[in-house]
Image 1 (cartoon, helix red, strand yellow):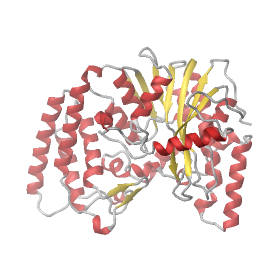
Image 2 (cartoon, helix red, strand yellow):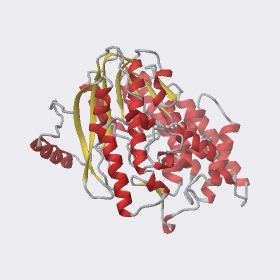
Image 3 (cartoon, one colour):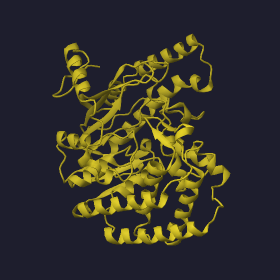
Image 4 (cartoon, rainbow, N blue to C red):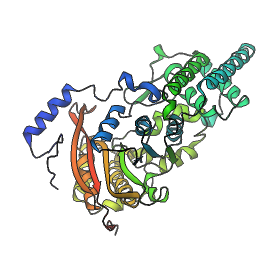
Length: 451
């Protein structure tokens, strides 16, 4: 498949452009960081794998998004696209399969609570929690064993957990539905960022024993998070009525969620085929807030996600049928399996590497096929994706494969922009992170061969 060199885009066939683009990426190695001016609302809750708000603004401008149009993020995560669109006065909708992330997105685009009353209510809850903690003595609360087993070991100290559970009890006892969701999200942020033993870099992990803490100022950290929310709502209340909605759903069945021809623009960053278990990133807060209470519920969450790692691959999965005739995907899968055999890798997960790669692209193909039904003719799309080498260091050029799949489904590929390069953990090589630009012409729906 050949691509024309679009403005500000990269053509792989041109070595000179490649060298220039790589030099540019090195010069802008901090491009993925959140800028200081972007922290309002985004800082309510986000995780390290998010892409930066300024990239959304750049592509809203590049794609000439207007206030009369509607933007979709089908893998909305913690709401980066939705928040930026709301700030710009543009209507948006997000779809996210993970319940904690979908909840965070929905709260982050709700700027209707009165900020002074929100803070007043939270202050009363904090006082009640502190009073309760003062009389609780030395008997520490904990969660049922089934819930504790879901957490990364030592991800939160026993005293900090006790204080968090007391605060959650007070939040429920003094519940005011006008503020309850915001107060819950503030607690998720405070616990993970200020009170836990977690670290992100970008994998989620637990601090070494010498740096773990048993105790933390949970109530104070939570109240500070609520104060941040109240301050941001004051600044942005003039945009509170801009429409933004969130659906907790599987983007591979997106045509059953949104009306036909209702979307003008798509800006998104789907999961990458990178062997990262995205459910681990939000595990602590998902369990504390009751979104995941046992192994069965965790399994159900994983089944709703595009298969991007072997930890959410199941025997009955068949998304790979969508790409069984795609030569490059089949070549990559065969190379991964051949390398596994050559290296003598025999674990259950390693045996699934080649299948996970096919299931990932199959899931993305199904998503793009379903998406056609809800796009208006002329809809513009931007997919932020990255090259990967997580499966035994076999290079997967995600952007170009995704563009090829989209073209086979009737989309026009208008460019592939280099966003940045990043260092691969295993190989120490620079990997490309790109924005695949598509256009849906609105022709009669083409059917991808599933046979």
